[in-house]
Image (cartoon, rainbow, N blue to C red; front, side, top):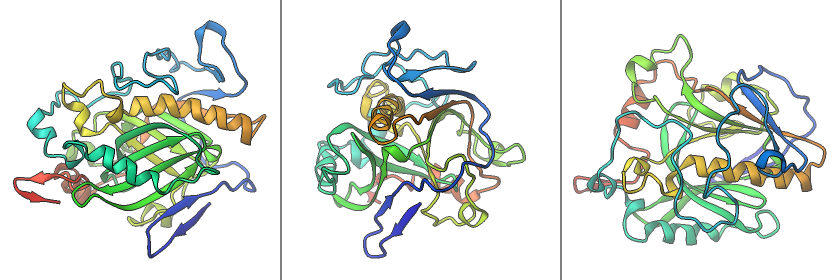
Length: 305
């Protein structure tokens, strides 16, 4: 349940609502559940795997909480085929210029609360895909107790909005390739949605209402969807943790597992491995929005927005 948005600040806090029974449609894909600690077969503590899609290599360097790594191994989630960002193209992103990302992190830290967040486990710059298929640049801080998601204006060095999701609220984490509905026209209009990412859900498997799905300004949807940042397609940066959604996923699974032990002992969070549905049917607006990169703060041939 969301407390809503303060009209003065556009800030959102999410809180767990435990009084509703699970329901809705079941995700079709491989599943695993995180529960008690396990160190068998070299697996990560607290994670058990099941299902035909759970054969990913999880013992990857640079994927352990607390490791001070700036490099990542090759991406597990699929990337757009044939896409390459040159250094010049990457320099168009204000987030990539000089120390802008570090400055932004310092600003974002100001909203943290020790009792809710705890220590920072990871800092990321990713792409969030909303329910209308629009892509936006977001800073993610993963902490011991929460996920903090920020919209940051890298041109003006200004924090514009943010939200907090407490880790013990998370009940599903999905990883896989994005898929449009069978009757969608988007595969014909938007060919470059041929890649993967992750989706974080706290809806207890309940589907959002019609009014939520069809309101482009709705901020109460019980899920968030992320993919790699475009800068990851720069060969120089394709092993950088900051832009890699896989690194965020690996650390998130471990952090949620630890949080469940403290906040929801005896309960389990489900990991889903399979297609992630993007419910967009014929959104010409998102086609224009995404191809123009309007969700990113960029230098557009001397015009900056």
